[in-house]
Image (tube, rainbow over all chains, first blue to last red):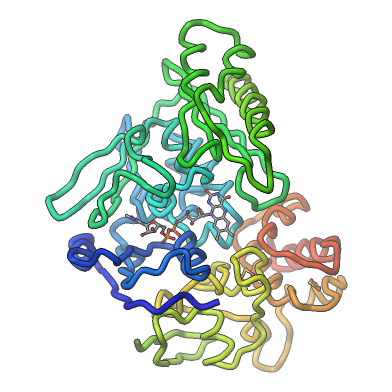
Length: 270
Length: 155
Ligand SMILES: Cc1cc2nc3c(=O)[nH]c(=O)nc-3n(C[C@H](O)[C@H](O)[C@H](O)COP(=O)(O)OP(=O)(O)OC[C@H]3O[C@@H](n4cnc5c(N)ncnc54)[C@H](O)[C@@H]3O)c2cc1C
Ligand code: FES
Ligand code: FES
């Protein structure tokens, strides 16, 4: 399957990337291509122009900045998985990156691509939501910061403007306890449902594949804040949420998984 | 657009349409048909090659993205005199293939896995090859082959 024809441009800096997409509504960035190329092969995406940002080497890094770890958007899943800094200071992110797809996917896909794609079924978007990460984006008028909580807007829709590049992801380095529960039936598959839980004073819980975007389990969070038992808090994981049904799971099964996995995650926090 | 790659140690240059997938570039432009297309949807691993020494699914990479890269395909695994690489030999000795369709991808993914991990056990091999599907062998002999190759390669 060939994608539809497109024009290919290669950006060597963020500024160049931004100028290449400006005035071209149909242009798209490509990083690792591991979400975009499959969509283009199925002709679900038919950009007129691809701006390749995959060679902007300055956007691939993991930096220890004390209370925060800064990660360049073009850092590949594999490099996050094996980063010593992340393994010791923000181990949840390294763990979750290691659960994305299979090793060959992790050699190509980038954290920025996964977050900018904003798929509710993806692992890293839910992880950055639970971690209360800050996303740094750069556009024609400079840089701005968006909290992960305000980033995911709808099905494959984020707060990123078409001419903005996600450049950095900042996560806290002082997380006391965390858990990531990914439920799937076959190796390498996407999560049927996943749960990320982070305790850092308060407890934040987010859900994978329970809606069009990664979602906070606000019912569970409120229950915990008011001192409910883990069992009762877990049973509120799907409160206010309308999970999708698909070939893998019915709505009822997804709700059940959200309860069970949230219970497991909260128990693991201790 | 003109792309220049090093494939199995040799530099090659071709003009390609930007939408050309790396797997088609390898099979059709370079006539290296050892790399197979199985699913064409990034799932089966039949198209696995090494890019910069790491396994990648060449059906999910554009040839233009690989411009300047070093690529190894299954044809580049044996030495010039035909002596098989340790991974290839282990697949043969352990009967790690039946129809052989998945084998080029399995060998490339296994090689990358062994290079990246210094103490592989059975569970790590099974997990490390999760992106490569085999419809014949039931995987047991593939896992045996990879463990044999890993110990021979000093992992
Ligand atoms: C077989 C397979 C299995 C997978 N399994 C999983 C899984 O289990 N869990 C999971 O979470 N994911 C999975 N993925 C998806 C994988 O995580 C992708 O690598 C990732 O979602 C996209 O990253 P990328 O760099 O390849 O982005 P691309 O495909 O290059 O881009 C994706 C989108 O983001 C935009 N974009 C990319 N980078 C930026 C940026 N820096 N700034 C602004 N916009 C940008 C692009 O324009 C595009 O719209 C799988 C993929 C495959 C092929
Ligand atoms: S053909 Fe590339 S993964 Fe199946
Ligand atoms: S040997 Fe036939 S698919 Fe693996």
